[in-house]
Image (cartoon, rainbow, N blue to C red; front, side, top):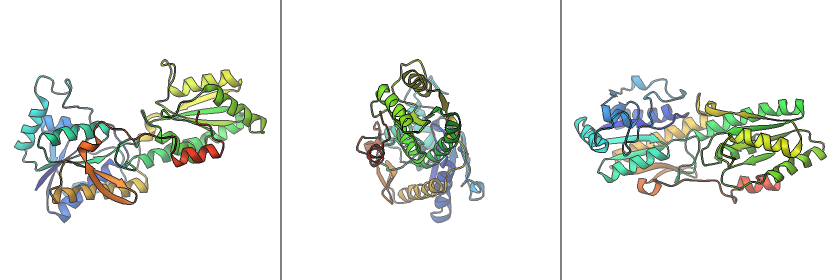
Length: 336
């Protein structure tokens, strides 16, 4: 059996570990031939490929980024590297000409949606969920999330000393698009006093009152963790907007920090390395058993899979009844 593997969308810690998990299992256990596809779906349009061997997969486990490269190519939309042809039809033709029996797609929500469309067109597809945002529906955790939370938590830990020394409010903005998972988990782990996520509405006066109450209790500084996707005036980044509003409401010196792409870089945590390895191995097992059109998922402690058609177009978002939100409120943390 000859399988192709690609990574699409944003980079993320753990992609290389997943590639390693898929390919080493395929080559060493099942005797499959593996072809790496460069630059995501763009590589399927241009036939930008390379054969993999066990040797070429060495040293990947702890590397950040993706050895295959990635792109935002969306075959079912106009534009991109090839714009004047029927891109899905060209990809189907290229898959046939390259003799690929299956394509493994590693990516986030957009990748899952594209993979589901190709599955309905008859392509043998197995996908692996990848995102630091942890917003892919159907899996408890996506690899990359734990690494991003660890980086964000470390940053929050470091801000405590500056905030304490200067007796000011520090606002830190973390990534997540429309989902507040990174803000919730890093905010709780880092001892945030206010945690703002897109899914829970906030009132700036409540935030100001929370900070002023802390001051009355002899706590002269506060840490505010905000997700990038929270509601603002539409003209400023989340951290800048909230910092200005807090300073206006409280009169306390407030500074903002935007963590940005550093959350997506560097080596994956041990948890993400192991999760990536498990997910990659299970993807190859599905291929060996002829189970296509499915996405790998972590449910509790078990690795399983679900139909791609059930995943496409859905988001997994923070809810007000999440354990961390409930416990945070019991401890006096302000969520808005």
